[in-house]
Image (cartoon, rainbow, N blue to C red; front, side, top):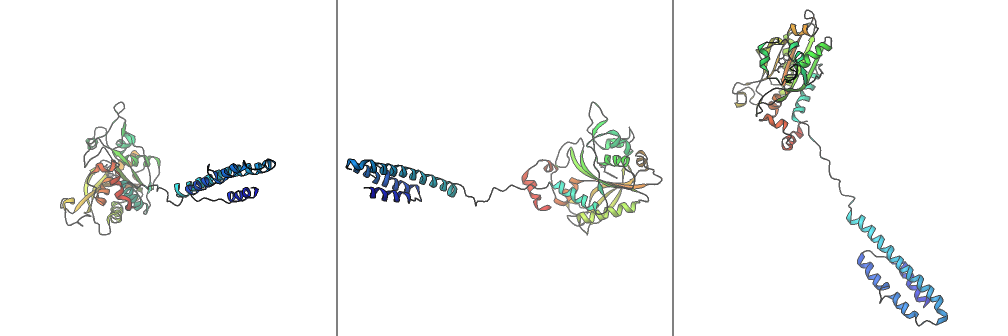
Length: 339
Ligand code: DAH
């Protein structure tokens, strides 16, 4: 009998099971009521009394070892199952989706890059401004009708606090803070009291340019703007300057570029004129220089200002201005490839 016990003990120690079913079959074979170990326990009754003590010990060892072994096998099976089938370590992780740059930022950065190549650096100013920086310093006298040109958001309690209507306010800040030569670009958001529609919004974006030095002429302005137009819209682009009026520049002009959709032949976009307006510009009025503490007998300069939405529309034909501020992913994702 001892021999039989040792043999089963050997078998138990060598047991393996690849699946839960296999393990259950083995458990039935050894540990169930009709299993081999139970059979030995039954036989034990017939063992001679003097042998009972020794054989009993062996039998107990076998029973304990068998239970232990089955518990071990169960555990290894469970562990291996959870790593091999529940968690797939080779599976790629969920991707973190990349955002896209906003079309207005793409175009603003492009404008900045183009002017950076001819020496312009960036200046920024506050969006909540005062009357002096937005109007006063820029040659808008208190009751001047030119103030009506812009529908301004004033703060009721203190009309000296207002939301800037143009980035030209940064011109006055820069001129008061720096000595010429000055060559800056001022990008930023501006606010006007407009009813929101597909072609107007109560806020939009501008890029202002300012160049002050000795002997700056209108020819310098024209050349810088021609360079910009060609870099932005293509080598074949032509420009046209039309006389205009702004309180802070004298002379003033508005600049058109040859329509980049029809190449200047005339189409619905340019209203069959072949030209589209893109910016205002001029020679900085000597009064503005003096208001900002710059000697107008020594220095002269030019300035220009353009709308970023307008340039973006020319490049990408966005038909409705409201799309720029709706945060609709279907719109924004279309600019994925643009930078
Ligand atoms: N500030 C003007 C506007 O908002 C644009 C402008 C015109 C800016 C002429 C300039 C300039 O610097 O010289 O309509």
